[in-house]
Image 1 (cartoon, rainbow, N blue to C red):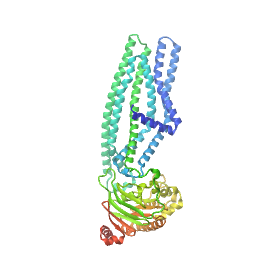
Image 2: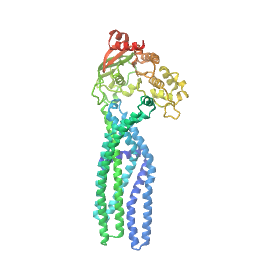
Image 3: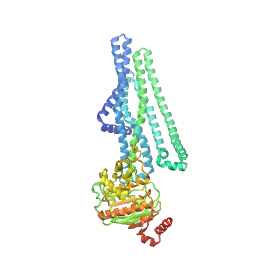
Image 4: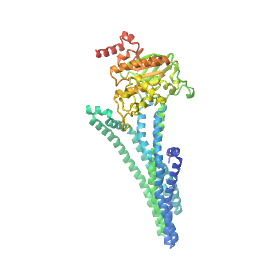
Length: 600
């Protein structure tokens, strides 16, 4: 067994000890005792037959009683062990789920989420973790097998020196099983993307949100067809690798079968020649049969341990991908500066460029931009211009590939990320529909005030959603979403209002960001929202010098901003007030005129 397998087994064992030391040790003791019982049964069978043949009834009776006791132990102790380690296995799976959640969120930024290879590894891990409920069983069984094999080898050596070679014949099936499992694991890795796409189509076909378009556009059959094609491709490749792996395992087992037959023949020859008793022959047959079972069990354990090792290896690879996209801090973590209490100059971008991992083009380039303290800034541009990427940069969710982002003259990389984010209020275009009671769906925006009703109602008022609690059956205590049996499903606009309330619950932010916050609102509702947003911006701007950034496609609201930034092809094309940009007759004026004509 390689060092990697032992390391994986030891890691899982330590995890189980942390969950419940008493149950872990009890399970191990029961498994080892049950495994050790079987070689001892074979030894007592020899005693039983030899005593019976020699006419010694007392010795035969005692040996028979011993055989019965050991058989009961061998057959039952494993079941009692299962009771002890079943809950531990569930806790181990929970621990690995939490580890995966921590790993994918183990960076101050989000660049690693842009890597397709990370998505593939996470998709494989999601499946493997669920299968690892047998992981602890494999570890315990492996220890029990080691004890049983040691006893078996000692018994074989006492019978005939050549029989010591029998355990060596177990090496080919073990090596074959290991090679076969590696081949299957590589196949699973190779089909991860196809499997992930198939699962995505399955979720699409079974979600209520997509149901409308699937029916209206007649896409249901097409989605099922594509899902079937992807799944058949993935399962076909996996089936081929499993078939070859099974043939390899069969060859390994055949090698052991030949050794098994040879061992029996050696003792049978001695018995026929009168050099061995009938008990010796019974012993070698029983022991050889146990070795066969031990080898088969060892192959299964080896497969489970290899899968366990693959899980930990993929965890390491996920950590490496996350760390690879986490730039080295400008200072040691303990010396990072806190966010300022108040902005006086604002936020400056100096020569900023951004390229996502694995991307072949630059998303943002040569950004030189000043967002003055206390100002309201609107960011506009066509789809793909880089608006959301700019928002992620100033929130510290991404680090620039080149250039610097300065907060009152301090490089954002030198600020404590958690401290900076505590001073950010943000609502994103792809907001999350947290299926919680309405109060907490909003309160998550300021976790210390999760259940503070006054703060939640104030936030909803800022978002223009003060009437929403009255529309819910149980007010702010109404559970939302289908995760609850009595949960209420909201309209897209209502979900968005809750998200806006969550974004505006913090009282003293330094940066307020609303990235396309009104996609589910009509033009009038958006205009009313922006008026409230301006009031909020003026309030926090006066208190903390906060910069308020608003991303929108509707120019009727954009024109009210103090400063308008026009992005095109990842670059700043124009900056100025509405009047200045319209007077300049550039891209902004063209886009504004086109949108204004649509409303005439």
